[in-house]
Length: 313
Ligand code: SAM
Ligand code: SF4
Image (cartoon, rainbow, N blue to C red):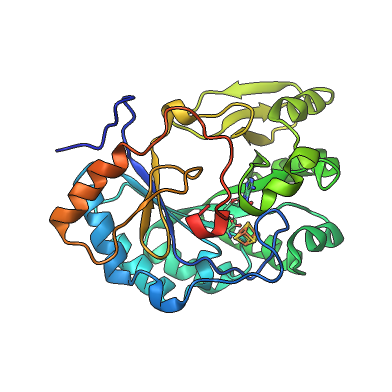
């Protein structure tokens, strides 16, 4: 097999696939309330996703994570999932804000999308609304509980922000213990719409760990080489992780590419450059894959103006 291994020895095994740039929330670090989105006609069709990913599987791809925007907003979500589930992938995951999850849990289960990353930046109704401009906290919590009962592997993602939700750090740890669900704290990244407040709201993984150590002993858990998070078990029995994209960049072990909803293949979340793979033949796809392989930066780029929901977060 002609594997996708770059000059730094990084093998591409995973891809984050965006199904839409639209969203039913407006998290203040992700997109403005008045956002504009791409026309539906530019979206990749279910069979196009399948063809691109199939060609990547022939080059060693093992995992797909569906994302967006909010992937569950995509009208042909079920058709896309069914097309992808038929491919020789080891793992299929979904990153979602959880609002529409109840409508799709059966579809996900039938099509082996069993790893759910659910974004939840606050456990407090008013703060949830301040951050997301949506009143959906109770629905998200109910959907998480339902997915847990159905046996999905769930991780909850919290973007930690100083003066916004950092006072909820301990609440999240206690919630993780009570629900037996891993909670991962993400550092606020310098990307797109987040750049304007990133400096003032940034809180590092080390700062969070120092706070948590005042109450708990943290036992380090060994993770796979290309894991984006580093994880701990707390004395209270919570499983927590940190995605420190800013303070401890993991570019040296990165095994991921990104495919946007309009078919732009990118080697890195923090690079605007990418190549369109929409409608390309199998042979051209393979040539493009070789080109994209050289586009992955060795060192972490400082910031990118492109919006997270357009690339596929
Ligand atoms: N709508 C889905 C969701 O929110 O889970 C999927 C797309 S969203 C862009 C993917 C993840 O990126 C979410 O966990 C979100 O919180 C995170 N995210 C967005 N902008 C970010 C930023 N500037 N820094 C860190 N994480 C960010
Ligand atoms: Fe929507 Fe996810 Fe962006 Fe929030 S982070 S606005 S849920 S795409």
